Length: 274
Ligand code: KIV
Image (cartoon, rainbow, N blue to C red; front, top):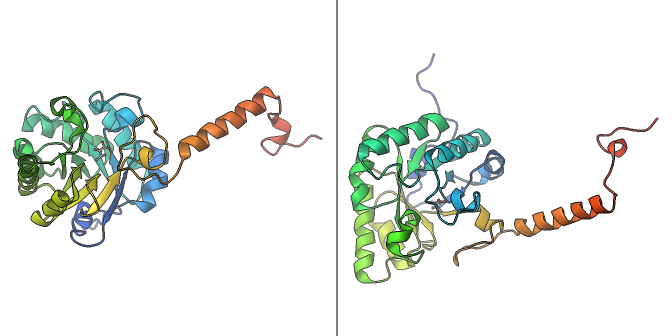
């Protein structure tokens, strides 16, 4: 048997090769059917902890558990063939120590079949990123607005607006890149800062509300598709209104049922009366 197994999906080195070249395309996915629909169009699918809000109706990402991340991660891997799959490490599953991070990230990798994990944080997480990288776990960092730090930040607001805050995000980005992360999500920062970070580090940057100065973009699919109206960040461009289409379809169905015009088996399933 050949030992040179070619991975059929887009790999982590494939993503890294986009630095300064064609932008990386990414959307979140939490389920197999959604992964199947997005697979062809995305370089990587992110099983984000945004599932807490977009899928479970929570008011933050903090209630997402490791089991939820693993179950949805495995579904997205099953539903996709081509895209690289990255799974977000939930709040409380990696911040205590590098050993805790390794134990939980290794479970995510082994039980989902994903290609890498994402963690939020800067300088304070650099040692953990290095520990994971040296043990074969590809890490995507996440700086700027960090939804898991909602309470210390006092809400969801754009980051790096004054010089000290911008310098801190730059230092965080460099620390995560130097520690061995393969990519960095930059969330909700002004364009000038996203551009400076993208030029200063040699790993790919993935923007979300951080302008097209990054090496790629990610959006929560439910936001981009108009399926999640509870809270849509200002920077989100909607590419469809699926939520409205679902409501209209449900209303038509309800009308059919109430009017007793719902088809019976004789004209369903291709059955014909004799
Ligand atoms: O959880 C998530 O979906 C994310 C992205 C939006 C970057 O972290």
